[in-house]
Length: 162
Figure 1 (tube, rainbow, N blue to C red):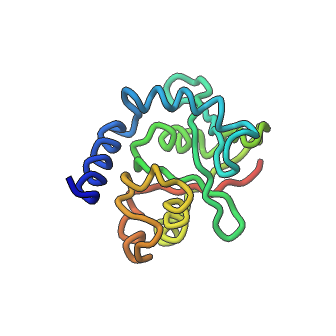
Figure 2 (figure 1 turned 90 degrees about the vertical axis):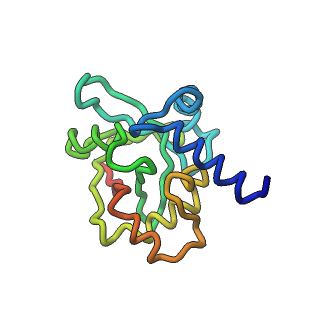
Figure 3 (figure 1 turned 120 degrees about the vertical axis):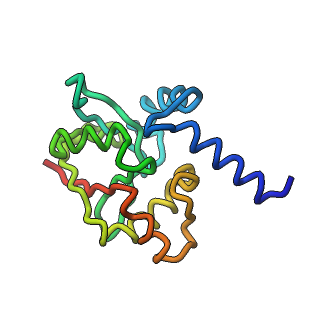
């Protein structure tokens, strides 16, 4: 099997592990392991845990995330698109959330970035979150126009402290 074909199969398996915007099977287990680590000082600087109130349960739900810094501001990107639970919860909560980063909880408000402004942020995200590349279908060296084409399908939120 060629390297390109193997890469395609691995990407397809990764996409299947997140059907309907939710982690399934092994990915669910990996998220459970990532949550306690991502908010600590031991994790890479670009990682955090997003805590947002569930739109149906009302409970605070935690999701491991990668922070893409672009033009000096942090952004969260949904590699799974608008159906991802955390995106739906953030929208229902009017952007009110808590970001646990480097061992500290910070109250934040997440503002959705207009589609026309997402391409460069998505490219930056592809650089810092290699595991998201199969979901985006692009890598950091792809043309900005390619990121502009996928921008409508990947919500991006700018992080602001409350």
